[in-house]
Length: 296
Image 1 (tube, one colour):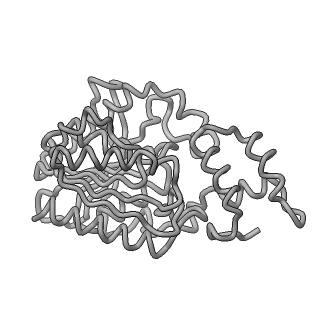
Image 2 (tube, helix red, strand yellow; image 1 turned 60 degrees about the horizontal axis):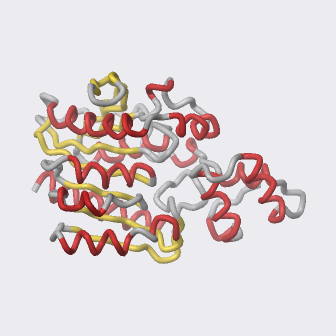
């Protein structure tokens, strides 16, 4: 079965998949409830497979791209899990110090898609670092279903600190200019919002369809924000009006975009929820934002 686009699926099925992705529905529950959409020999399990990521097909930057220098490195997280691990990517021929971009994954850990995103960031002239929140549990297991099972087992208080420490580590590297921004997707979008409240010297935050920061923490935000939302994403968008009101009340510099006709996850080109035009526009806005705030 070769269903590649969101419009190939019933909207109700996409809502079920979103519930599955975010832990409100287990695999068996999804397959059972998806069975009513299974026609012509297609099963609920086949629908789930069609909606799940296709990492190899969507890869944009090869892992061995000669333009880049990439490695897995450990970093200290004394306020979090102790020792953490991530994927560090730099332009191979960078003449000097580089500004850093922290790349925060969805609720699956450091999978091949996020590593590819980190390489895309590095090709724009930044030092990209993508931590793996699942490292304390053995790291991304190489399988999305197993990653889904592991993620709820994390101590989220420690995990948040792991990302705070990652930003500080990236900022303090000898090959860093000291300027760091963050981009995050889904779960990572909520982490990007959180980091903006925790790091007064953050140079920018770009949450893609991420949960909003607590209203009481908004006065702590000093960094400019670039927020991307999917039009068809009631769960995340429900928190936006109050968040926007708080940002305005505290005079936080922000720019927000809602992309018409898009689903949660529209930037992730490994799944059918990917929207090519919206993703391209959001990504160009993101890179322009980083160039302005990290290199300007």
